[in-house]
Image (cartoon, rainbow, N blue to C red; front, side, top):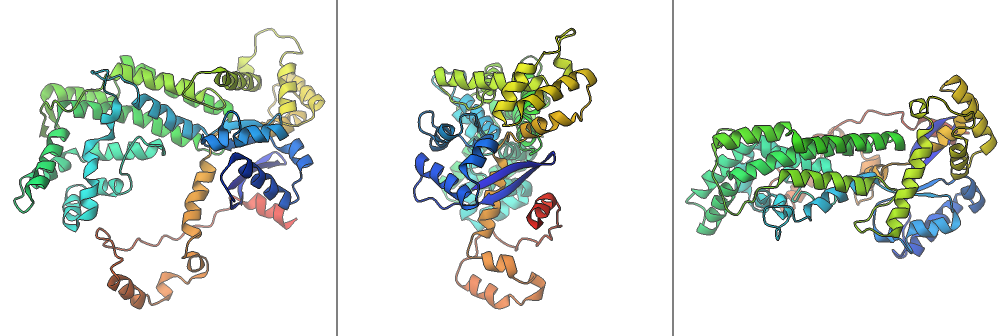
Length: 471
């Protein structure tokens, strides 16, 4: 799937370009498919060499492999290309790295306990309408999240994990009530009652509640960071600043507990949380919060302060980090507060020359514009506009494509025709199709009502693109 960023008249525009069907999934075939598709639209190699500035992808080895990934193959054609590993995916990897570190009380253990055993009961509710009804009675908001997320801390957006953990926090008392009720319900068999009794002991464990507070504080910060990194207008320097700020917050939590950890520490002293009496359970291990938070901080630095990341240290990783540092250093020259008090008129010219070469803009014009900017400090220096706009084309995140994938899953389906040209639901009698559907047994056990139809307000986000098409 292609998402393209282009600039015209100092305006940056992101838009969906095309979907390409691959013959095979090797790096060479993907690279060839990308270029062939561009050639099909008369975007030739000469134009790309003068205008293509970046390639953004997730961290799959086929895409960003160090020796023969798609990024490396594209660099053979376009030596100045910025190959970028999506920051949102790297944030997920940083969290995943921490979960694999032996930082709990027993060094032979790791953070696998954070997979949250109480979430395992999702399978019981999905298979049983009775359990589903009981869950809805106890915690409707938790049911909504838990049906969508069966595990947390896998490679998906951190915000989803945060909402799941927050649902456990907010519905703690309701969960306790339901587990206790199910464990004493004589209509259930012995195995099922034992399962709920075990879940109840896990939930009411003092260490589990402490772990819950630590996780919620950390995930709150990561969720906010993830959402900021998905902003299509976020520049590289701004992204670096918000990442750096989040790291400082995480590091400060080592000495000063977050709001949720303070709350559970008080609950631990009183052995009561949200009106539920807590106990000690030997199977639940307490997270070493200081080591956990330091590990998160270190992994964020190693994963995010580079153009591409890996969990191994080698010469290639150092090269990517040097490229990132050099690019960030060159971009920082645009910020007057980063200038020394007394500087030569040629200060920063070398940075502008490197950037002009990388972003394929006229070097002489850019240097002249920057010298004028140093004298006047005006934001709208005409000779600097082209370079400033080109720099904004660096895509920090792959989230644009992720959003398109979600839309594609709704559109590219057997229902595509009816979705595109079908009449509104209130204009058609659907009774016979509903009856046919139910009689075939295709209705899921937990589905009681059809989703409410939401009317989408027309947006003008692509107005500039529409104007371009008209020309």
